[in-house]
Image (cartoon, rainbow, N blue to C red):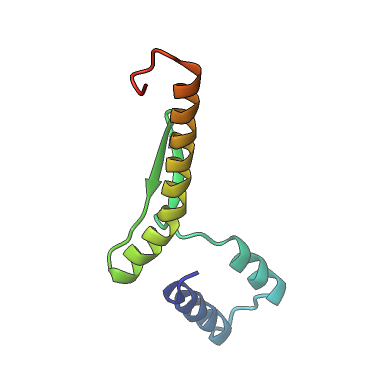
Length: 97
């Protein structure tokens, strides 16, 4: 998790703790484990299409987005290469031959 996100969590938590709100520490722990920022690597399926939304609007946000996308892209390429190899070996008339 990027330090920017940790800073944002710390700021929000500090505000809650400084307020007069009576919030149980267990509730805070649960919230921190499940909280998600809409638009931050927000993966959705809409009308049978896969979408990824991200609000990367500064250098840190772009770095975070790229760090999340790189492993997915590498996996995609590995899967594509496996498919291509399978296609070549099973189809003697393949355009790849």
